[in-house]
Image 1 (cartoon, rainbow, N blue to C red):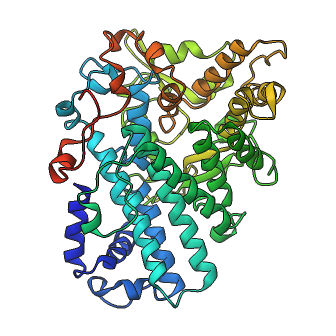
Image 2: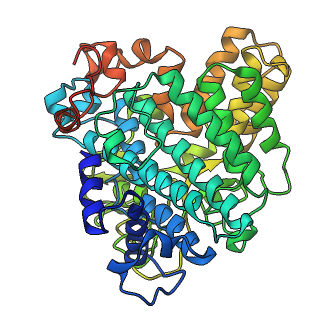
Image 3: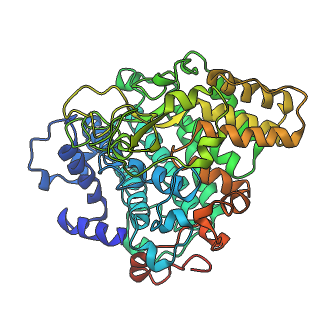
Length: 491
């Protein structure tokens, strides 16, 4: 269990709960460029040392970011795993005959032999535990400057909220761990999703107040959370909890900041470093096996990948359901989808990221960062919220959808469409704009109640095994270590 691993960490860094922050710094120093030089032996670094000055405390927080992206492609929730699992569970990717996630045929036992346990463990051990360790470290420090303390607190709360968003959407009720104290969390039962969302929203509100409204802290790079990242994720949290008024208000605030954000007309630049659409990106370490690729680029484009040419067919091909959703002349199909052929077979793949295993270079300059939050989502959030009761109403909803459609080069919606047609249009834009991105398609179908009717019609998901599969089973290893951790219904 992730908490069992944390217990071992305590023993390695002296038996003191707060020493976990030193482990964060160790991970950081071992996986990316050093922000600070620590002259003492790393094993002797204590929490007091890590959080004794602004630079070393910042390095600890940067270690959490580094672990989120540099933990191995598709090995953790923030390094492509949320995208891959969510895309197979939905209708983004074509499932293979033996892929139990894609077939909607999971059992608790089968889930243990998939990547599902990695999703749980990484969300807790990196996102939640890492954020909690930083929060406790800065809370105990009397020597950090106020500005740095507020900055790190805001970022840590954002990371914790981001991690819990994926935990609760993949697993439902989950333990709400707000401490690094193993004695408190080892036997913690699951917390109701409503309370998890309450904490997510509170963390994001706090982050909004604590974080700057610019990207100056990293010389303009959009790789650390700021006020706008917190606002964007807060808009999503409100949408998922049905608070359409606040969802629209938060999304509106991001959209109106057109100094920082805009929708690039060239779709091939959307996922580039410092794209104007980027609200928050994760920066990979180009000295690792990732090189200058992103995790999803690595997964979808193998070493034998030849975009538009003959090559070895690899995993991660797009489904017929997704391909048929694109309208004629949709620029997203032209820019974000590619193909390979082998003999007479043509297979289509995501191509949002242009650098993959086949063309990455270790040590080369980065041209793409891993996109976590971007502006198009805010238009879709405001549109959906406006269509479901927010004060902005139908006119704003249609106008927002048309902003996305205009960039895609497809015909604009008419103002005369009825409410049912508008909801269908919103769902389709979510699908064609956010395919193979952080599991959006699956999560959207679930929260709108559309998943059973849409997914049960897909050939390889028939016969439909049951709606309980819309939540993943809690990994058996976690339940063995924590007897108070109950299993999801019907597993």
